[in-house]
Length: 136
Image (tube, rainbow, N blue to C red; front, side, top):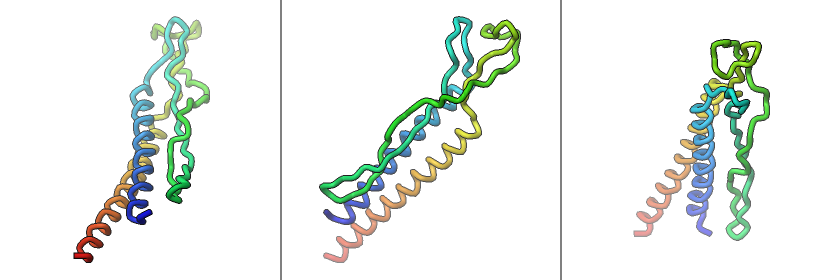
């Protein structure tokens, strides 16, 4: 396999994995303020994402892929708000286990990883262009 094509495939797998991670973070942030309901349904449970190495044996490449999108089983936060319709008999409301600060950190890390993979892809593209120029 062409080493410059390998660069593109590896970088593309990293960009795809980080874009899925950004989607999960966006969904978590969008639902951070959800609460339980009066019918007893739980609030939004934070999603987690894990990655794994994917070996492409035919081309000898080690890439990354999304292994699983799971749920964070940490306990919900209780907020005292007796006027809320979903408050229990003690005036507490179950609030989502999403931490906006943690999600912003995850977003920044995923964004920077995506950018690093994009730079790798662009470097491979530039090298391919330089190689073609040399062959002329």
